[in-house]
Length: 212
Image (cartoon, rainbow, N blue to C red; front, side, top):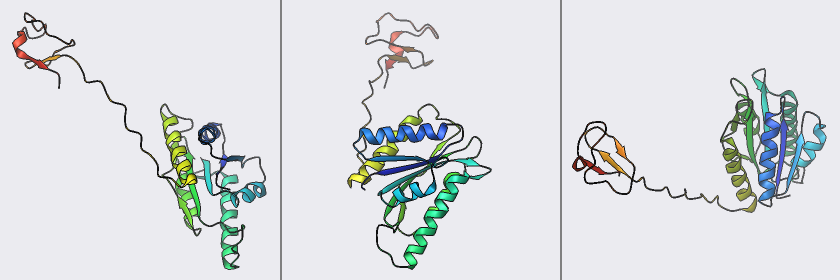
């Protein structure tokens, strides 16, 4: 399936919230999405869909300086199946190769799950990690919705076989006004009266220049 499987392990809900936001953004872009909470779903269901989907997102909180137990077990099981199938030369749908992967890590103090998940995934043949992990500190910080939006765009473009289109920044309005060359006071207006006197240094209008 050309789509995205999101497997998450959450303790206090922050990781789950991020996974849900990512899933919503992907769905809005027309990408098929399947989600599993690995804390409550038997690994066999997640493992089955991991072999089906072209792209996988693993999202895990950090637990005792490691990966949350259920996510760690899932990743090791996926790695075990990938190694076993490669040794048996099974090139069927049971072979986890040529998958694109993205990561979300969470941790209140020192998030470590992203690095550890990367180490496990890097040991599997043909698993490409698309982006650096999105990092949460317990909950989504202001502005992190944009990070998830950017990750969704990267995943959607990869699913569709397209290049990520960077949006041009919105043009900024040029500041209007005049600045005093002596003290730096700024007079905000389109025009500067000829008889204007700087309220700070008492210099005349002739000592002002337009803002750059």
